[in-house]
Length: 95
Image (cartoon, rainbow, N blue to C red; front, side):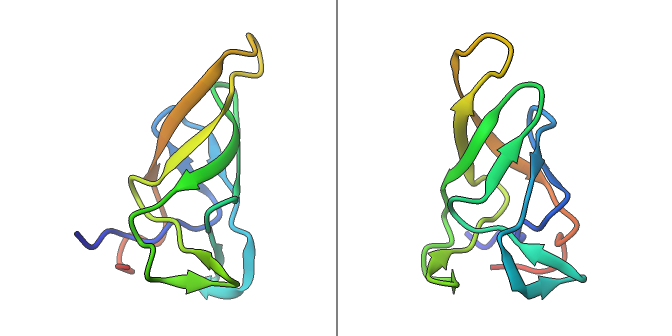
């Protein structure tokens, strides 16, 4: 199912910031996020680990989209956390 592209300033379900790692591929002037893009915030610090847009490749990595899974740890407790990408400025760009 096609879903919107994740870009820098996107957030996860838990409110953690997603940073785009494809500086030469811009959507609305913001770098696109890919698998291995960093996720950082109060609930999860880690990387985007999965995407349903596996046929959309940017800099050799699948493009991240809404519902991409991020995994990492909770910075306060050290407990492993998994969250989903949710809010993006690239809402009108579908992959």
